[in-house]
Length: 193
Image (tube, rainbow, N blue to C red; front, side):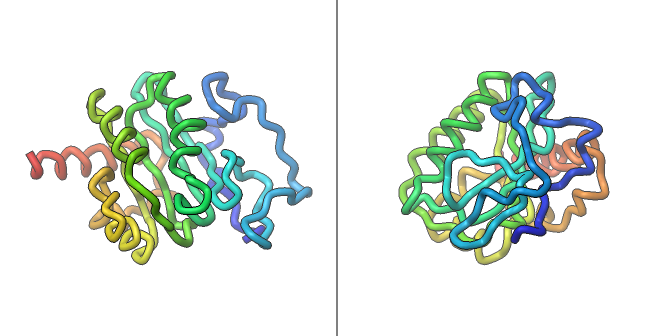
């Protein structure tokens, strides 16, 4: 796992350590010291610690005028043991929402498992973004992880699956990526209404 880096090619557009509104503003990173681990596996030092021992992240892009954020995740999403959704919501999401973010794209190709608890924080987050015409997208999560979300009945709080898992997001710049995702979400929400 130590060789899996957060996506870095969008740094010319956005860098969370240079963003005074970011929860990771002025964070210092080492390229050589591996200090964070998920269980007994060290992870690349560029991942940000949100306070969970099993789930780490990287804010890849944020645009406060548009109210959008793209966040890449790695590890095990464990609400059962560590209440990761509470930590993520309170320490990252709410911080960003105070700055005007209302549309979240979570990239989960490196999320290995999901262990549920209850849905209170998911419901709260969903209601808060919905009140502001926002949404939460899960992109490129592994099929078994999506099934774990469905089995826990928290999948209804997200836009997920289908064509969203076929997007080659690394080939797009962050604004074009957002336009593609936004178009797909609007189509899907239009079909639901």
